[in-house]
Structures are given as structure tokens and as C-alpha cells.
Image (cartoon, rainbow, N blue to C red; front, top):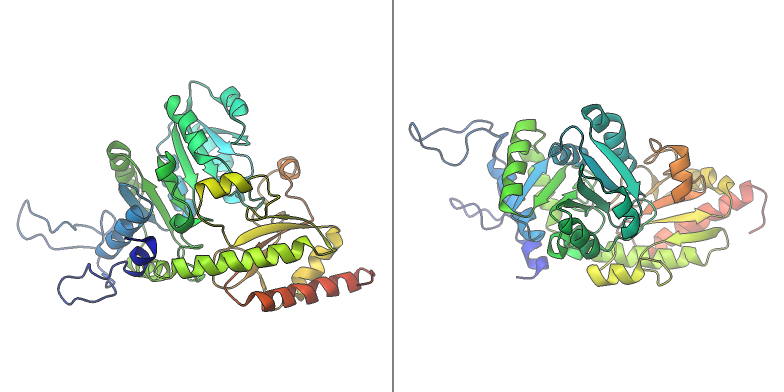
Length: 387
């Protein structure tokens, strides 16, 4: 069955009594036992919940995994994954990294003796130099956030497997509609499901999908033990959002590509970072391992003085954090999403005071371009330049 059909039918044939095409919200934490030693399969909602189970089954199927685990946020999902590791363990991590992941690694996991090294994960030689007997996993964002760097997943997964390391891929920006890392050899996929999977800026959620019986069993133990699970209301909202994922991702991609090309030619813009553009250094790898492109990109202005008036003058586009919703949002990574990353690292990878991140929604592309045009024109007027 094609993925479009899988998405549209999430939960539609799972309710055997009434035949409801939307799976119900089971707002229950406890479940009766038929008799001593018997269970319906549901005992306590932290361990397993009917609504969450349908979501998890769908997520595992969509990512071609063996099991999935719905968490209360993307960061809760990351924390659950990181609980696989012990004192003294070491991780190799993408250099251009979401600030919240960096914060979790450097300010919390270090308390437990887990350390990380950051590297361009396309540089296999550099990764080999960083690999130690204590290295346990590689964590990849691809595309990265915000500079949209692309990693060859199959190549890194093969390198990691040869050394007995786990490969973890953050697939938030592409979703299983465009990219399935488990099919390329990785072991764990993670999503901030708040973003494209939910798609409507109304649910906070995370998803973990695992490949392999032993790894899946260990993740199930951690998911239950840590307890940062997704409640039934949010599980329902996430399933509802995922039903339209195919339609939304196609529109996100179209809009983002159209607007990236517009900004690439604008006199106030120095560079646009989007893998769909032919000049992007990861363009060929992206085309090889993915069937499409995300709806988020970043662009660098020629003058940092443009930033404040642009963010003040955009109207249809909201100046707000997050990404992946139907509404367009613009963010200033240097002081928002990536503020926890040290200045020297931000500057080294290019997250400077001229960079804006644009999560392109599903509005009409012409209206979004018109909003950008008037905001850029207002910014130029305010800093005394002629249009």
C-alpha cells in the first residue's frame, strides 16, 4: 500500500465494535483484568494505552520499523533514547545541531558521564578520529537545523555498523513521507512530532521508531520506566494531523522551493540554504536518499540591520519559534532556537546575526512572497537604503 493511503487510513479499521473510522480517545489509566493471570493487553496507561498504541503501530509501519514509542515531546523522546547509554559512554553528533539537543547533551547528559563530540558527519575520516572504545552511537540530523546540511545516511550507517555503533537519525524535517532512514541502515529514528507530523501547531509530541528485536525491547523498557509517554488526547491529535501529512508535505515543498528561489535572487539576500536548490552542496545526496524536500530553509541577509525590521514588519508570516505547521513562521536562530550553543560554535557553522530561519506553511506562495517583499522593503527604508 502506498504511503498516502497508509496515512489517510491511520486508525480507521482499528475499532472493532462500532466501526468508527476515527479511533476513539480512551481516557483511561487503568484497565480491568478478566481474571487473575489474564490481561486484555492493557493494564496501566503508562505502559500501554489503546489510543497511543494505534498511533505507535502506524508510526512503526510508516518508518519501516519494528516498534514505535510516542513521547510527551521531542526532547522527552531524545532523553528516552539517551537512557540507552551509561557513564563513560561517548556519542558522535552532527555539528550543525538543534540547540535543544545540544543543551540536553552538554548540560544534562554530562552530569551522568555521557559525552559527545560534534563533527560534520559527511567527514568519515574526522568521525574515525573521534571514535574511541567508549563510543556507542552516531546521532545525525539530516537535513540539519538551521543550515540544512545533508548527511549520507547509508554511508554513515555502514561505517557505524562496522564498529558496532548505533545510528540514530532525527527525521523531523523530512518525515517518513520523504525519507525513511531505517531502510538505509540506521537503528533508531526520532521525530519531534510537534512539527510536520502533527502539522497544526496544536500538539506537543515526540516519536521514537526502532529496528531490531533486542533494541525495541530495551526501548520499550525505557519508555515505560521513564514514563514520558504521550497522553490519549495528544495521541488522537497527532493521528489526526498525520492523516493529511502527504498533502501538507507536498505543499510545504512547493512553497519552500518557490520562495527559496525568489529570495536567492533578492538583492538584500546573500545566501539561501535549501537542499532543493541545485547549488546546495547536499543536493545530490538528498536526491539519492529522499523523495522530496522539507518546508523549512534558512537565508542569510547581506546586512544584520535588516533582521529586526523584517521580523517587525512581517504580517502573514508569524515571528515565532517552532516549525512544520500549516502557518508560516520565521525565527532568528542566533537568539532563539540556537541560543544555548556557544558563540564560537555558532559562528563556526554559520549561525550568525544575519541568519533567519523560515518555516514555510501551506498558504499561497504568492501571498508569502508579497509579505516578504513588503517586509524587506520596509527594512531597507528604515536603514536608509534605496529600494
